[in-house]
Amino acid sequence: MSYIAMAASITPVIAPVLGGFINFHFGWSMVFVSLFSYVALAWVVIAFQFKETVAQKSSIPSPKKMLFQYWQLIRSSYFMSFASISWLNFSLMITTVSVMPFIMQNQIGMNSDEYALWALIPALGMILGTTICNRVRPLIGTKKMLLCTPILHGLSAIWLFFAPLEPLYLMLGQLVMILGNGIALPCAQAMVMLPYKKQAGAAAALSGGGQMVVSSIVSMTLVKVGLSQPWHLAIVIAVFAVVTLSNILRGFNVEQPKG
Image (tube, rainbow, N blue to C red; front, side, top):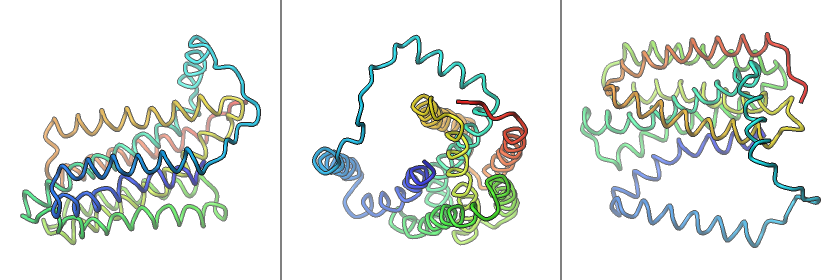
């Protein structure tokens, strides 16, 4: 599951790079044509090249049973601690990806093609973060690996708060933040799924669905209240770092459920 989380986490960071190039050279409508083509190609490949892995099919659980499973997970301090780490880190990443293009284009004056090139820097941060997590986590353990995230986010917040409004400085600050996201997301996903072997479907669905819902609400709310400056983003990153640290400590201190 951690490998799947790595792949899913990289795509929102790579997307602005590709989107910037497509928008500048072919127009905004081609962004949606490209998305449709990508989804259509993925569907064809999955439909004809992937074999079914479910050897024994089971009946679909009733809505009542599914809601009960979700309710049990929501009431679990263990699940909510690690799931919320994933939700908040993904929200932070989506918010930054949404706001940074406007800062770079409106306040600095670059076009979408130029921003796409600069966006390669934080994109490398996600790849580096997930790679470090994959290599180092078996050596030092998940807890110590996760604790690197609030440290990196704190450094990123300080950097963005005091850095001048120049592309290199902004991208370096985002690089450090994304590096923390790349470490946190695979670790949190692995910890979420660890005790829920019998409820793997419900745990994965609630974790993934919550990630999408929470990130949408958080990013939309922050943009609505006026998040438009690097120092605004620095404050948000600092607050999220404190919340992430609290969730890490709580998650490892509560009893692991027997799933």
